[in-house]
Image 1: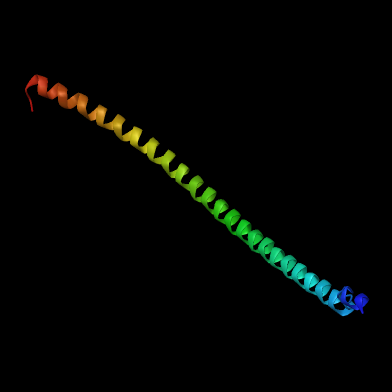
Image 2: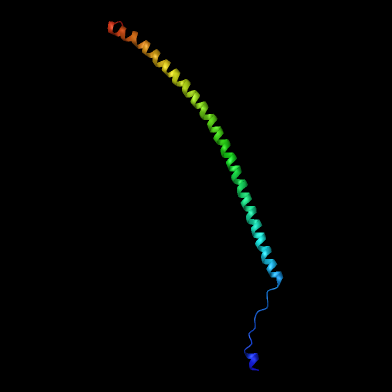
Length: 99
């Protein structure tokens, strides 16, 4: 009887099915993680494409603005030159007292 009192009850080994369930759960989590990562990558690629298109549009607009700005500078310089040409005779007339 003393042997029975000191006997230790060890838990039974886990059945194989539980190990497979755990492995399946890990596989499912990994697949889900990979799927989420792939979706994130695709989303980032779409963002990159959209941003590249916007950048290209801004470059086109900027080039147009630069061209117009250059034309306006030329026109502005021509007008300043005409004003100077018109001011000289006017100042001459003023000095002579005709205006």
